[in-house]
Amino acid sequence: MSRLELPAIDATRAGLVLFVASIAFLYSPIFIRPPSGTFVFLELAVLFLLYALILIGLNLQFGHTGLVNFGPVAFFAVGGYAAAILTANDPYRAVGLGFAWPVGLVAGVLAAVALGVLLGFSTLKLRDDFLAIVTLAVAEIIHGLTITFRDITGGSIGLQNVPRPIADMTGGGGGAELFATIVVLGSVCLLAYGVFHRLSASPYGRVLRAIRADEQVTETLGKRVFRYKLVVFIYGAAIGGLAGALLVFYNGAASASFFTIDVTVIVWIGMLIGGAGSDRGVLGGLALIMGFQLLTRFFNDLLPFVTQDQFASIRLVLVGLLLMLVVKYRPEGIWGTAEELEVES
Amino acid sequence: MTLLAVDSLHRSFGSLVAVDDVSFEIEPGEVVGMIGPNGAGKTTTFNCVSGVLDSDAGTVTFDGEDVTNVPAYELARNGLVRTFQQTRELSTMTVEANVLLPTPAHPGERAWHAITRSEASQQREREAREQAMELLDVFDIRSKADEYAGTLSGGQRKLLELARALMLDPTMLMLDEPFAGVNPTLTTELVAHLESLNDDGLTLLIIEHELETLTDLVDRLIVLTDGRVLASGTPAEVTSNEEVIDAYLGN
Image (tube, rainbow over all chains, first blue to last red; front, side, top):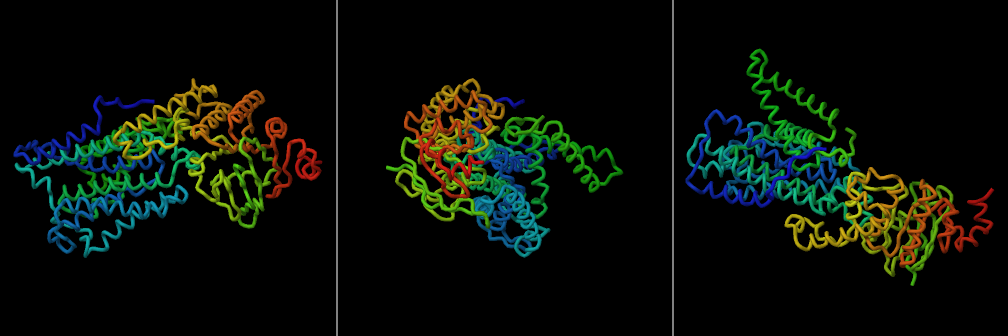
């Protein structure tokens, strides 16, 4: 059993302080323009922080409560599109209502919550595997809808002219807005991690882990199992929706290509490699898998005779291989606890 | 006043009638055994009474209140706690966490208290931990507090389950085959624990196959066959009842 070391400071407090500081940084005339050679890393870091938000919710759902949500991208997409449709100004062949971005942010979270309530109420009373099937199907249906309802969503071209609040508030140009985005998202992420970690480390989290272990026993020991499952599912939906809204405000656009099953695959693999149920471990796992993808991208440059498309497929094989190795030799994940996950390692 | 009254309980699964008109009453402070051959409907009766299964017809009254088909968590909070036939320790959690889990009215189990780490939550957790440690002491598994429950021996799991149920401070415990697969030494120990709990006022309803263990422990026996109550009375009365001998002890 190995664990990442405990930080000396509380993540929730640090996240709050950093968040306030990052907002002050946005309003200040100060900006930091990173060298252009680092952009590829910084862009990946933004994506990492957004996926980390989804994963923080997913880990509460699956890692702690045992809810198999195979469609986290659905909430990410619904949050993103709700935010984009409400705030876009004159998008090309799509609906844009032109509201201010805070409206879109709130709407993105609420839309994802609404989907969470709907799915939760309809499936969480059924056997465990129904949730897995339903979430996977719903994610694919939503992806299909975003492509076919092109008069609303812009189809595969997407929805442009979405406000970019962080970029607008940052002077300096170049990579300055990229840096500011990382500062803001980083603090949001730290705060979310802190809050969800407090949940999982408390008596609340104990009830969740009991539900994962044995629902019926938990119920006969006086806990309202269904309500916990529903609420946890909704928390995960909300933070996924938030991540989606933040993505479109970072990109200034929403497009079906941002919200593919790849998102689900990456956060799930990150969680399994890091160790489901370990709040810090899953984020480490996500960093590993995204770092691995970056590394293989550089590797691609060394092999000019392999096209990028071909290499994307090879990368998927390599990711699969990595997952197989972890499942075979360390089923609890790198930072997970075998006894808590009931696996033999 | 009668503590638990079960009246004309019915439950079927498709065409199979598992519980067919079961009625019985249990007085406060009693120790009652429920016996019967396999498939007599003992566990289904337990499940219907404890809210794990909904019954098709009939009423269950506990402590003066109609609790028919009340969800299991509510019954547990109101003092009617049950265990399962197979030990169902939460093996992926520590022994201590197993015992702390049932802590009633714990503010820390609400999200806001958990996130703010409220004083009320921490206070309740301290009290609960104290109570849990006392219980683990009583059942002699305190040294295992930090181990995962999955590492306990079969007997220790039974003790853990009992300790865990007691965290709810129940008025009545329903035990489904508590002595199944338990060695004679531990059976004696368990019986001693149950007797001492009963001395403190806990009412017990126990399903069991092993008649020998039960006859010493219980005040009264209820015999079930084919989903019906065949006989009820003191162990001596029941074991000399012709019908019971035919149906259960017989041949």
